[in-house]
Image (cartoon, rainbow, N blue to C red; front, side, top):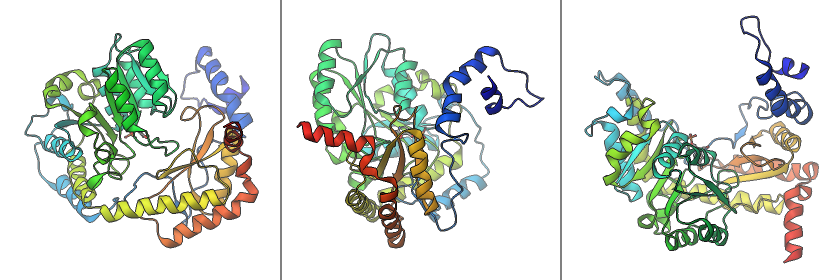
Length: 414
Ligand SMILES: Cc1ncc(COP(=O)(O)O)c(C=O)c1O
């Protein structure tokens, strides 16, 4: 109990927490705090210095501060409008948000779509309206938490299939029947690409709906950045595409596509759209301008992919086991939370800033430092990260991380 008192300080203005809650915090949290994290919050390192290379954001194409986007936001803020803050369900079809929804959907190759307050809200709202108690939801075991929460909101039976394993998905569909198949296009913890064609084929064979979360491929992959489904020519075979607009769009919103025939059903059914207020006019204006910038960003996309190939190759050469992924998210999976903290500190001391991902974002003892690349990294910054990775390898011995040992054991077996 003493640990709880130390962690959850109870200033005099706060009533004492009930014993049940104090016990829960003690049970679920206090041991991590004291034993694994050494009394420091696991996710907070030191403040990044002025020369630090930031690999902890998702602005993949470096659009933040783009003059066209800023100008659009400022004009919208300055405009004397009649706009009121209200739920999306009230916005007329003539509202600028709907023009943006159409614009995003058509760019992706779909009929219509819905803006949401976040990617989290988009996934929750979509799953809530397409699944129910009788409709099983099959999720890749690494699918984003918001998709699992969507299945929960729908009260649907949720089944995990093995990561990127269409054969396992097929066995589950055989066993439990048609439903909704849910995958990420690029997985947010590992940078692994989904075997989308195979997954779509399995879903089609079992007459199931397929949902693809394109948060980490919208803007970065496909023709004019229209995403992985577009790149693979699968858009017309995928029922719903969702995305956070807090990644390549560097905004504060989410989106999902839906057939035009579902418009009013969605408006009156998706809870985040009814019970929470919609985006502000300057956010809509900023996102509309961002869409224009992203469509024209072929050079930035090429730079992002070149940076990805280069850093992945340098890190592998230096002995880091990064074989789980191929895309612009690179996970350095140190294992325990304390090992991830040490890794983060070693990198931060050398001005390379990543972010720790641990439970509940990863499974237990698969904690990692996630590095995300962007098109905006300069040659000097790339060279600095490569230098630091080489210098840190003998200190960190990444070839001895559990994930490296597992990979060697698997290779030995095959
Ligand atoms: C794959 C994926 N989906 C959804 C989300 C949620 O997005 P947002 O931050 O916009 O709520 C994220 C962000 O962590 C993500 O990585």
